[in-house]
Structure formats: structure tokens, C-alpha cells
Length: 200
Image (cartoon, rainbow, N blue to C red; front, top):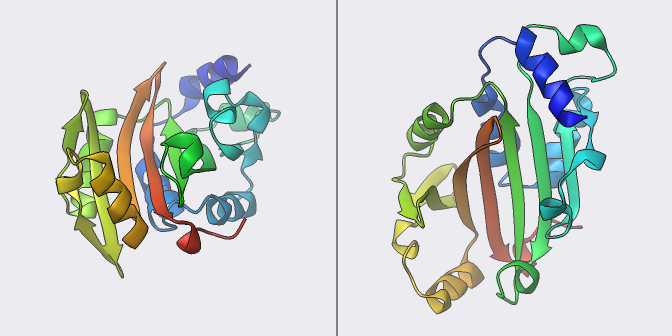
């Protein structure tokens, strides 16, 4: 079902700009899924949680998927507006990374019209921090001081104990590019002490 909807949308969509949505929904909210959901619901996005793949539903709690148009409306599917998907979820550290005492939230925006390379370049410009590469995957490690993004690139190759200790003292963010099955986008994971995690 999802593949058919995406095919229809691509046929009529102009060049997508999901980067702005990612910044507004995921970066600005510090990957707070509830805040992102409130924003897209208010903008009329459609709840598509039933279409979530098992790798998301089995790993994260309260997983959510929203589409920025109504698939039941043929006119919306053929409009010039780009199709965008918001994905959110969260999990406790011991469930995801074997790190106790922390919580991880994820937030991402994907689009079949997005260009992965361009989105990565724009993210580097927006954050103002360098990217790093691990196991062939490009990522941006950072923390925040007010409105400022602070590079945490030194943690990219750090031992688990060092990462665990850092995550106990401040919120850490890991952003990365998604490019798979005709979809491209950006995700950010927020790793923070339980005391600083959003209320559930």
C-alpha cells in the first residue's frame, strides 16, 4: 500500500524540501516525538502508524508515522506538494544500546524526492559541526548549549564507557542520512539521562 501511494505522489510532485521539516520537527524539538506529533497533527498530517516496518515497531516504544497528505484524497496525491513522512519513537538505553540510566528518542523526515547528498550538506551548514564516518555511515555528533550546536565528534571513536559517561552528564544527539528503497531523509537520535527525558 505504501509503495503504491509513494509512486502516485512522485508522479505529480515537484522537487521536495523536507530538510526544513526535519529542522523544524526534529532538530528544533531536540527529537521530542510528542512535540513533533503535535505539530504535524495541527498541520493536518495523516496518521500512518499501521504502515510502520517491524524494525521500528519492535525496537522503539510509541512508534509513530505521519504522512503530510491524505492518501484517501486522489487530488492530494497528485498535487505539486512534496510528499513527506515523519517517524518518531523512543526507548530506554538498556533496550536499545545496553546503556542503563538513559533514554533515546528518534525523529526523522523522509521523502521520495529528497536528495541524500544535498540534505547532508545542508545539515552540516545548519549545525555548523563536522560530520564523522563510522562503518561507512556519515553522522553528526553534537550537544547543545542554548541555541548553539556543539561538536561531539571526539565521541565517534570513543569507548562505550566514555560515551556512557558523557550521556549521563548532558544530552547527546546523533544525526544521520537515510537513503534506502527510493526514500531519502534525515534522522536524529537524542540520548539523554532519564531525568532530562521528555515526560511520557
